[in-house]
Amino acid sequence: MMTAKVDQEQSAVSLTQSAAEQVRSMIADQPENVGKTLRVYVEGGGCSGMQYGMVFDEKRDNDLTIEFFGVSVLVDAVSADYLKGAVIDYSDAMTGGGFKISNPNAKSSCGCGKSFEA
Image 1 (cartoon, rainbow, N blue to C red):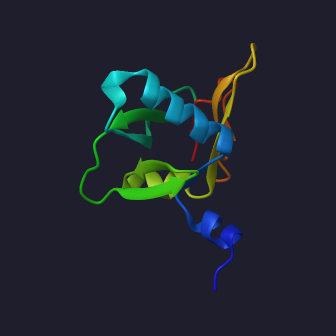
Image 2: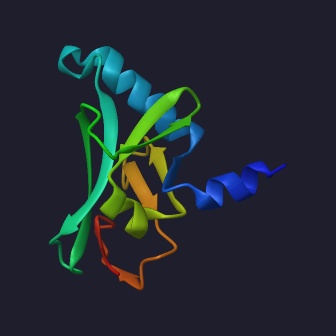
Image 3: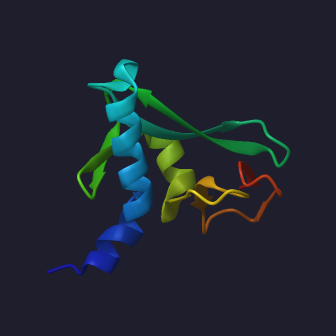
């Protein structure tokens, strides 16, 4: 039997409870997001070569679907390689608040926290 920690480490990405609560709130407060799922992805760009993106989207073939605290997250197979073990947190602090991604695979990241070097 696998422990929760092993399952999380093998997961493409994970959400903290505060991030899951914020996603739930965003779906409830924005009618255009109802029935959609949070997609987390990686694409070329940003000041460090790769950047993170998050959008509410429909499930596609070959997407991984992961659930945390009752919130589903979609990750495509290519992004999953870059995001393996990453943790998404949310803070409502006045300065520096918002979603933050901690990625153990990033060799370096920029000050904005939205891009990284693979």
